[in-house]
Structure formats: structure tokens, C-alpha cells
Length: 197
Image (cartoon, rainbow, N blue to C red):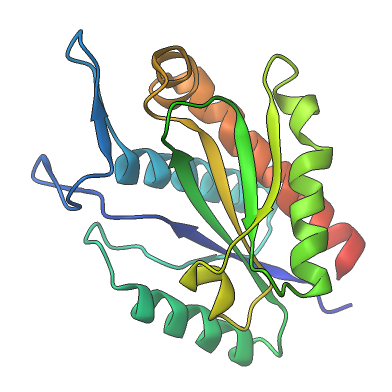
């Protein structure tokens, strides 16, 4: 059987020499705690990659660089992999949210493929297994470029709110929270491959 292969994206830039590579996309609390979204996204992706490697599951890292790579380049890379692998790749783009809420949510394009919708449904179905104490905010639709302009089945996964102090401390900046987020993503990947390849 031709198995599906995940393409792992991470929103925004990372750290180079201690300097964050993206304007904005960070939050500083009154106690001085600062979170940089791009660093968090890469930390989750790195943990996912480690777990997939241990399980022998092939994958692609869409943005291995620490620089903030242009969206058009990200999309071109994803579509190259999609064509190279006979349309057997799917894209999960990892983010953390902002705006004063709590919990996690998934985004798909307005005119999503059936596989994008199926991938999104796994994010909802598995959420309470991994985060029974938290809230799944729903599957939402918007034509973000990474969703609407790629040929891949694709989702954006918003993992908690970086401007929510409790969530930032519990999930985003703690090793345990990052491990739990990565395990959730890996579970989504494994189930999607198992039932949709």
C-alpha cells in the first residue's frame, strides 16, 4: 500500500544567535516571561520528528531553517513534495494562537478537499484523549495561503494561546506541555495514515 507522508510546517521564524527572526509573533507577560511563537512551533515540530523517526514513519520537514521563509517558498516546497510523491503527502502547519482565548483549534481552507476535512476531524476526535482538561475550539475555515494555495490536503493546528498566561506556562513553555502537544500531533498523523492511505 502507498502510505501517506506528513509534511511538517512551523509558522514563522526561529532563533539565530538568540535573535528572534520574525517581527511580532511574540508575547511578554507582566512578570517578564516572553514566548516567541516561531521558537515554540519549531520545538513541537522537533519533538514530532523525533517520535516519527522512532516509529519508522517517513516525513518531510517543510522549513528546516531558522529564518522566516517566505510563504510562496513554503507553498512551492509543499507542492513539489506532493507531486514528487504521487499526491501522497499531507501538510500540518503548527502554530500557537493569540487573542485572549484558550484551547486549541484547527483551520482548513473554505473549499477544502475531503482529505483536508478528514485530517481536521482527527484533530477534534483525538483532542480530549490528550487534553481532557482543555477545550477544542472547533474546525474553522479561512483561506490562509498555506491552506488555500497548496495542492496538499492541509490544516493549520493552533496549539493553545501564547497570550494566555496559564496556557503559556502549562503547555507552551514547559517540557511536559510540549511533549503532550507533540504526542497529540503524532497521534493525528498515525490515525490519518492508517485510515486514509
